[in-house]
Length: 548
Image (cartoon, rainbow, N blue to C red; front, top):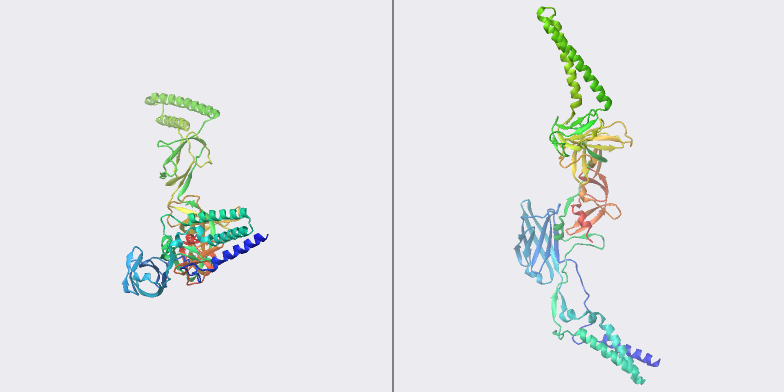
């Protein structure tokens, strides 16, 4: 027990001695605190016209110049800077401007004045750029293995403990413990020497190399929830903003709806009698085929049952018999007519009777052989086709539906009467906007206790299909006050709340919860959550929300 206590005390004394002393040539009084930044040194400035960000490089300034209200890049501008090296002119490279700045190699704070001239006017922006001092890192420290860099103190303590244990064992004449301790010290020393010394490297006098800590300039979300988006990232994401303005708008109501054909430019093709379908000479028209009014789309051959066939044969025989009798009478009248025994009027009446019988006989044959032609009621394209050769078409079955694709309506469903409809728009699932014209609404409730409301599509109807679901925004005569923004400005937060991004600084965006109301197919009305005069992101908000 005494041996163990003496070993621990000796190990503690040996371990504390290297920590309390300083190595030769090193100052351990005040070690520098490590620093790290996430952005390169930059200078920002804003005015009523422009927003400017100048990012420092090794020997030049990269200037990003945007419109203050929309964040659109300003191109074809003349940019000059008054700085430590006097007045210099910028060179345009794409949508950025570059300025030579050899004074960036020296740390300090520099006052900069930028003069911007465009076709719309000129402006002056004053700002300052602060360059931090460069940090030095020695080559020996950089090349030192992680084992020696992080575990040097612990290795020293362990070696001191073993050394103290060995000395105590020798004093107490425990040769086995002393030998074991010596072996452990030798093995540890060889391992450290092997790891610490590298072949072909000089670990003598460490040389200092200048390093700039800030080497990254990436978008990231800050601790307070705001998003830092550098100007290069904003250009890649095509961020655009809009200055908010409080205005009075017509109150809108959103209704579910679907695309329907114009009843005056569409129609159904149905058979008047039940029969078997057969194709016209060119075949059945396919879906999407353009047809003209009165074009033959199919034929219907009415089938005859055994009873109908027997009745038809009987009627044919009776007509043939009557035709033969009248023909004999006419022949007899014609022989007696020259002698004057028969009046000519009797011959004419017999001939008319024969003609009527033959017509009846011919129509009876045509009923069995002549099919019914199904013709297009209007001009348009085939929207629905249910024709198959040999199929039995019933009288209530729709064989074809013809729709004029240039004349479409929207049928919306409303659960309340709409009074004073002034304007309406529709939005598809692909965020496409359609201009509508109000046509009227029904007076009777449907089974779902709703009223049908009809609108005509007055804008571009290309690529629309019948039955496509849309959301109709109907403007009424009532008014509301709020801020109008495009629908692309809104994103859904984690709690389902509507969120917009406020552009507070040239490279900073803050998410704000808002309360919205429908406005039209392209925009929404912000009722609460943001004040007038703010710059709100109208394009790229979804991409900003993905920054982590």
